Length: 328
Image (cartoon, rainbow, N blue to C red):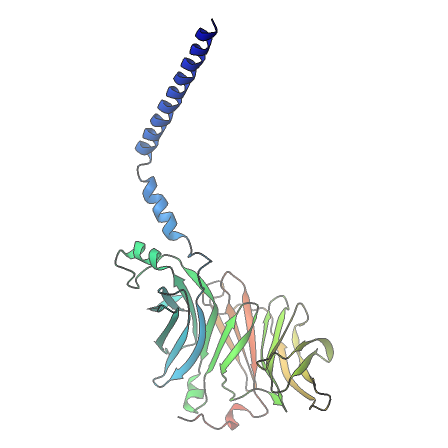
């Protein structure tokens, strides 16, 4: 009796397994019949995904102006990958990084402001997209760099022999000035103020240089807002939230030297936080507008991922007309 019961249980289990297998097979055939391009869809989806964040992101390390004029850029990226360069959202050049992850490119300079950013493509994704071994014609999304190179040069400044504005900007980081149309930074003794970056919410990044070690204390409209230490490379930066009201007022930096016998210095600039008016094409990738003044330029641009940011740069004591022309 027990043997018949066990045999029945085994037989029932086998029958249930057979029915389950048959059902799955039928379901697979139905899925294959009704969605025959599922594999292709999955492959297309994989191609549309951004490059893995674990890869070395593309950076822009050096920028230089060449005769022509043209712009020479170099940086790092994932080794043996394709780096696409975009100017205000439009592709202008693609290059390949070498086995050490180094890349460089020379771009023609148009008669308008430039905003160059870089994108990284994983080599396998490019190959799958083009089928030609990654020849630089891929259109699938890649891993975007966070740095943007801006070049702004007015015809009148060019005719006067004044250098262009070239700066490297990144969200939540101080803008680095490569070349200033004012020929220098506002400075007093060892201390200098560089770019001031701010957003529409009043957040701000102050930055500058100091030839001497110490701490830099910041004032907005004669109100102390904080201080920061000069780095080993001579750079300093201070980030604050909601401390910049609308309107015009002085921003002052004071150097407190590490050496008690060192030189104390202070430098002030006439800052104006502009209202959040729309930039040309605002809402579009690569939106950019510039407010030109004899002693101050303000650049307002769109950020990758949304939002706008402004950068103010300042003249030293001289006005641009008094600056000696840049050497050829």
